[in-house]
Image 1: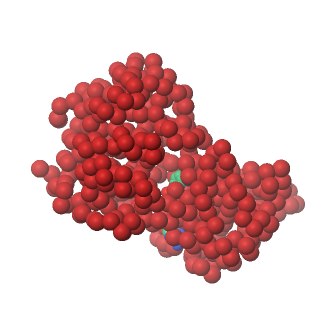
Image 2 (image 1 turned 30 degrees about the horizontal axis):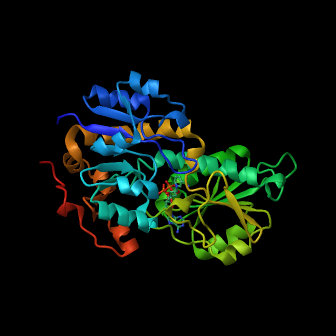
Image 3 (image 1 turned 90 degrees about the vertical axis):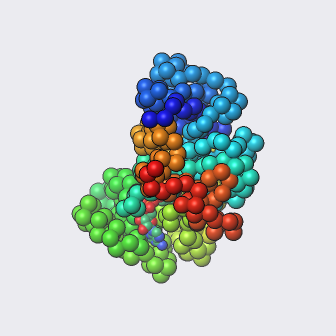
Length: 378
Ligand SMILES: NC(=O)c1ccc[n+]([C@@H]2O[C@H](COP(=O)([O-])OP(=O)(O)OC[C@H]3O[C@@H](n4cnc5c(N)ncnc54)[C@H](O)[C@@H]3O)[C@@H](O)[C@H]2O)c1
């Protein structure tokens, strides 16, 4: 084990973001391993974690400047936003959700600063699981069905339909495009509400798995442009839940398809953090979550789990802590050498883009990770 690492946790300044990247329980684990943990004053307040709880865990409470300036490893939840760009610097390892394939200004800021940035969402195991996206996807998927049910109500601009129906009245129809973590969790809640659920998926293996675990309670259909067009016409609630890892979401839903949907129906584009899967999608916030396109309510909140920060902060730390411990104990080079999943999370090394889909998205130079970090244990 190497010497103690300086680990900082800062307050999220993105509007409506109340999560924090480390719980007091996580801070204690790191302190017990001999690391120096500092937390920006008030950073945990939005998730109901007071400064005193971090102090009891052995962390120090510091100013925002001290946190950014002294850290070797900086933990965040969301990507740095414009006022934070000036704080990015060489010698710092940033570990956070980045989603830079959809964010050219941030990509350029990271490259110009010389920082090293590891993205939670592209940490990917050999069997293609996304362990740091999964907990937020579980939460966003569950919230999407709740939000959809809410915006189908008449006072919220919807058709005035109860998703579950009642005895003698048909339930609403929910169409979910993408049957991964978000899609599965949306389906579970929609089914729980009593809706009739269809999932459109592209992967046959994934559909077989869903068939097995959901034992005939949902309709599973192969996703194609024609099938999406037909399914959307029948839907009361559509949930966009596709993902191509590290890349912009494909625009599977055209403006024409939205125009053909029922008046007062709802489209919830969870994939909005990757640019959205409909031509009509643009990102919204929790304070102004919806807008109307041709009579279809669009809910496109880019940080949905931010609405339930207590649940999200705990779920996120449960998933990230093993990786944080590996980086802190061994340094990024050795941690990456020992774990290819973590290696896939590395998007930028000292200002060079090491994630191909990101470089392609912005037409910038790509440097294979092997060229800058060793990939076998030293
Ligand atoms: N808005 C938010 O707050 C929020 C929170 C969490 C996740 N997300 C986003 O939700 C999206 C889904 O995440 P996930 O964790 O479920 O990913 P996932 O990889 O578990 O699932 C994505 C699924 O989409 C399927 N897919 C790919 N192309 C398709 C196509 N053309 N038609 C149908 N299905 C297709 C894949 O086969 C896969 O099963 C991502 O864009 C993710 O970034 C958003």
